[in-house]
Length: 144
Image 1: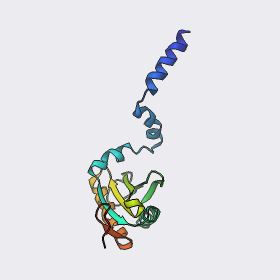
Image 2: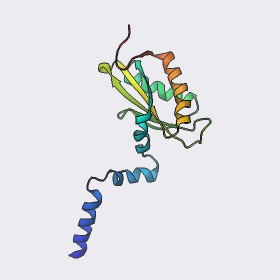
Image 3: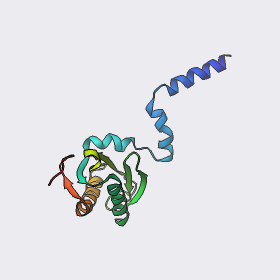
């Protein structure tokens, strides 16, 4: 009886809204994006007039052309994670967050990383390549 009660209390305490507990399995297998999401406050971004899927696929294509390892591709969450960036430790991650704007007629592309050099390298490449493919615009505002 006491063992069941103790087990129940431990279970309730450990699952009672603790986000880090739910993130633990992701950390163990190496797919946690918490660091990239928290680094978004210092992200760099551009906005392009294009459809969400077009930009998502272009980011993957240009990343693969640059020989980056595309670690996570999650179109539903609008997240792509790239690694193996030349000039930085090959396990350094850069998160590419895509947010649809202007009723789907524009997409905000945000880059975040705990490594500023990695973020700068990926930004230089991706923003240049995406700028060749799509028209840049102000945040959610269409330009003529």
